[in-house]
Amino acid sequence: MRRACVHPASETCYRDAVTDFADFQLAGGAAGRRIVVAMSGGVDSSVVAALAKASGAETIGVTLQLYDHGEATARPGACCAGRDIRDARAVCDKLGIAHYVFDHESSFRTQVVDRFADEYLAGRTPIPCVQCNMGPKFTDLFALARDLGADCLATGHYVRRLVGDGGAELHRAIDPARDQSYFLFATTREQLDFLRFPLGGMPKDRVRAIAAEMGLGVAGKPDSQDICFVPDGDYAGLVRKLRPTAVDGGEIVDLGGRVLGEHPGIIHYTVGQRRGLDIGGQPEPLYVVRLEPEQRRVVVGPRAALAVSAARLTDLNVLGPLTGPLSAKVRSMARPVPARLHGDELVFDSPEYGVSPGQAAVLYDGDRVLGGGWIAETQSAALAA
Image 1 (spheres, rainbow, N blue to C red):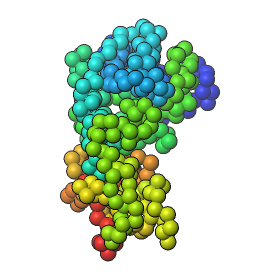
Image 2 (image 1 turned 30 degrees about the vertical axis):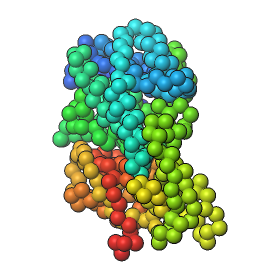
Image 3 (image 1 turned 90 degrees about the vertical axis):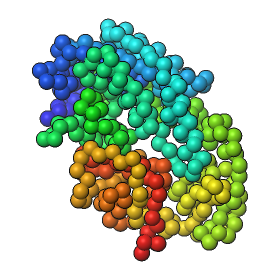
Image 4 (image 1 turned 90 degrees about the horizontal axis):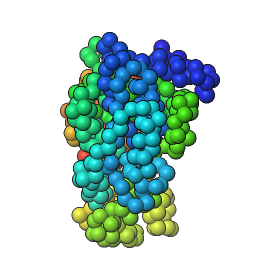
């Protein structure tokens, strides 16, 4: 049982955290072992490094330089760019541990940024954080940690790694407001054996209190944003820059094909969107029901048209038994809902709304992550009735 931090700013808080995670789930304890910490320059990974150092392990901080585009390097909330690399190095200097920086901008551009743009052009809603975890952050860091002779790779993600009868399991964080399990569904069994997530059992205020107690300069640093490579939050602007054809406009039509207006490019729209359609005078609120990129059409309809009875998943990653009832989360901010998986088809017990191709469907048994896959297409509840 993890101890609660009654006085978040006290030395007791830090001492308790060290005791809670002293072994980093390493057989025989962490003392004398080697732990590589993935450091983004934020408070979370910095505290993980501090806990690893306090455990008695030889601790090495590793930062991947992923993006270094002008404004993004200085904007609060960016990660893995110039300012954050400097912050990570300062933390390592404070802790007295080694720090290495590896340039992975090329793979990040190919695996994450270019795919982000192409997904929008294809009428899907991408999740670049998952792609980053699947590629540079886990696959590349995993290999680097192995090359450095590490016994484990520790990160600042808010999830829990528990060991059950069948081995390592991935579980949601104790703090539901901080849980990042949706973005880590594609973690493989091999990666999960090697990864450690010390912060999954802590609330954020405790993490910041530890950073302050240790005198780390990042204790009050703002949290990183989900999409670190978009300097001003203008996703469409970035896609337009990378893919000039993204500015091609087209028609906004209703479910029957009647033209209601025009749009400046499908990259400005996602399934479930209501605002920004500029088609006033309609008898009821209309939502984006689907995107038809080949025709450059945005199809809109009433909210009832968003109801989905099932979704076909691709690239399914399995971390636990998927037979029988489970719950599925189809957006990062959505609640898990009851569902069943039949082959690659996820069937919802009740119609679900806002299910968009390109997003992930993450499957749970209570707090345990069973796996998940990418939503390739959906089945309308109205058509299934």
